[in-house]
Amino acid sequence: MINIPISDNINNIKARMKSAALKSGRNFSDITLLAASKTRTADEIAEAARSGIKVFGENYVQEFLSKFETLSQNKDIIWHIIGRLQKNKVKYIIGKVDLIHSVDGIELAEIIEKHSAAKNITSNILIEVNLAGEKTKGGILPEKLTGLISEINKFRHIKAAGLMTMPPLESGSRKYFKHLKELIDEINLKSVYKEKLSVLSMGTSGDFETAIEEGATIIRLGTVIFGMRPPKQKIN
Image (cartoon, rainbow, N blue to C red; front, side, top):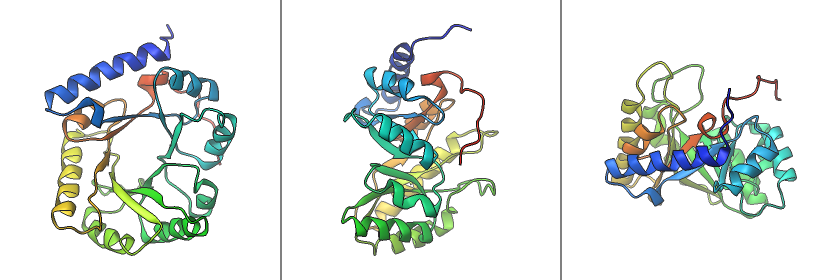
């Protein structure tokens, strides 16, 4: 198998992003390309950063902390947590990540608020929505979304920036992306939150063009940037 340089992959992705944005009447500059760097080495991340990627998303706190330390000299890298966040790991990431994508309940929000208040900072979050009601995935059900946002509204050290979703792999993703866009528009129209929600994190390597067409502001890409993942390893 031929290994295509990461820089070439990124250039190809950006061309596809621009095409999808143009097709839907959007500005390419309004869409953030996040590199999903789970299991990727610090060298791969550094290469992607040299090739123009600024935002990297990690799934596991322990793995993130190792990379955060290794790449601490690269001040251009912006870190997000995109995977399911365990409550007992929150304290380790506060102040180190720009955005937490996977808040799906008031208990997790309360812990983020507690540790953010202790450091006197504001943590930016997205609320993960489980649009298909999949039991194996995180995310709040759509009918409970407004209630959760209303509760988060009371916190002083959390800022809800928008919504995130992971559609089922086996079915077409467009309807789910469209649904998430409808939800954020409805929340903003009803002024449920103290500020306008503006971020839609949706779309991965197989469907990011569709996500852009439906309003994604962050797309989370892994294999199309780095190639196929190495063999799966157990990470705590």
